Length: 532
Image (cartoon, one colour):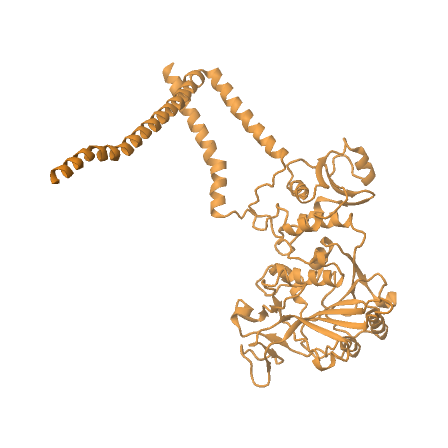
């Protein structure tokens, strides 16, 4: 029995071994097939290279033809890429040549045909390339370069002479003409050019397609330090880029706030309102008018009874002499206690810049009488507050960086929205409530032309992008244009600010590739010369 089992086992062994060898044989066969295919491919590639060398590079005429063919292919690819209107590579830190998502969002729902004519410009102009990107957001917006001689109708209609340039944004019978100088502004301290092309073009597109453009009036004659022409000229430029009409208001001349005023801006009164001005502003409030109030810190006590009477309508008590100082290093700039970074409250105005910092210089506290708000039908929303470690300094001779005895400490309100209900909604008649909104900041320098420090070369409004955004968003909100509330593109000098990797790629394209081509050409030329 035992012998029989061993016999059966021996008979099975070759079969098992045979079964184990089969997978290895198949694997070896597969490897051979792959190697044959690779050898065949390498052989074909080698033949192709040898054919190029023998039939093209040795013969001078054929070499020239080959070079011409390569150049033609390159040009064809280049023309094809241009015809696709692809977004160009943009290595500027501010992305000055790339249309922002904010602009795309603002124009995407336009249902009218808009033509942007760059008269006298070439197709490779950077601003034209930027304008062509609107088409990716809305097919109805088309930008193109035209010549005044080939389009005499445009030149004649808009007064563009032959040889000169102009940008025409046209929608039906409505149009807006821009010049190249409109697309830039200049830093008067550094003499650097600042591009505002996107803001201007987007503003022009919307202005020719909308029927409702808000009007903002700046009250003049009551501030010694701030006006559109003095202290806030940069803000004036930025406002021109918004969908806003800006006017100056001298109530002594007009006798009232104009009926078309959507928002009245009152910058830091240092003189009391006249009786006429006070009455005009109160009438404006009672008609549902909105106000943006900017109030810098006071260094000396000034009696402003009429100014305070207007503020009292919203529950705001008179401003005091003093300035807010910070002790929290995370809420101050460069260790300067008077340069504070307030905490922004979440609201429509701040939602796009909520996590980003604005910088206030020498801010003052806003004293809101919480006990009177209900009686005044006022609802308060804090927009900007200091940290709990802040203190209010009234003695400017004290150089201590911490609060001293008698100085008020704690979190202070430096920005607030106060909505006052003038008349309640009437369900029987269907009439909506009539309200007046005051947005007030205990600061004016943050959006001014003045430098925050003696060492700074830049105006305060440009130190932080969000300084500008905070005031422009406030005006858009008060003017009932919530679609204009956003975080805007940071405009700055047109500088090359590629990353290290991008810089390496550009340098390779500019220097290395041509150098390799020249080197290869010299080697081929030397080989041909030796063969002769």
